[in-house]
Length: 409
Image (tube, rainbow, N blue to C red; front, side):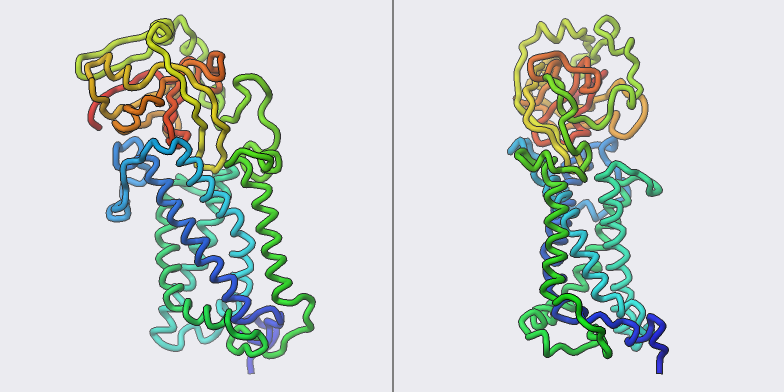
């Protein structure tokens, strides 16, 4: 007989909450939630236009995993704000559900023998990939949301490849377990049998439904303290767990959120001054150099657009004013706007260069912005000029623009 003091013994696990019904309810919630997470994650990756240019592609060895990539649209202008807000908020909200699900099946991870047959061995391997992949994806995702890049390597390839491994294991597990899970949920809990039911359960302290209410309450609390930075409304003030939670950063026209300050990006104030700065625009007919005064003499347009970042936070619509990107393309010989490579004064770091597709350049709301909310850009918001494009991820709205090269990329 196995020693009940060891986790490999069924007698070690005594909680009366464990059982097929409890595990199946949590599993069905995760089935829907993780599917939405995976789809919105793929959509987020497509929004970076990795198929357009190598400077946008953070996973150059993706091969067939990029089969679905498509040209990211500019309508509706709040598209990325919605899809990435759902992705991050749902991921945080599902953390209690995931932890409860792992707790409910932990006896199976210690069950002996490790493999009773080839089929059982394959199931155990898929379970390890599922558990390991789930913990990896949720952990790296939460760390990225909190801007804590403590993991080795770049977040983008780690999270992208990890998502495919995790979701493959998840799909295999769902195919095997979904019929059983549905039957378990329909079955009355007192009729439960199986390896998750403890042979000698301890005294109950809460019912299984009470435990589900506890898990749901934890998810609701995380939702209330994270969702507001993705959407406008009263929940913005309660979003304490997301980047830039709490009050807005000061008042005035520039009082809205940023990720990187000019000091963090090491922008040389002298180089960005109105006297020294020149915008270099290159295209079919050659190169032109424009001062900020030159740009201000061009036809100026206005656009009300938000900034939405991969970490799940976004601003409200801000009123930007500047020169249309398509008008800059026309200066160098393009009646039909092509793709453009935008380069920043920022010398180091990811996305100091970014490529935009022709449809993004052609949109009349896409601007090289010179002012926001009626005043000149602040240094932290990209002075002397920055790109703002509807529905584009924040990192593609390049700040401190120095050079724009139009043409097919």
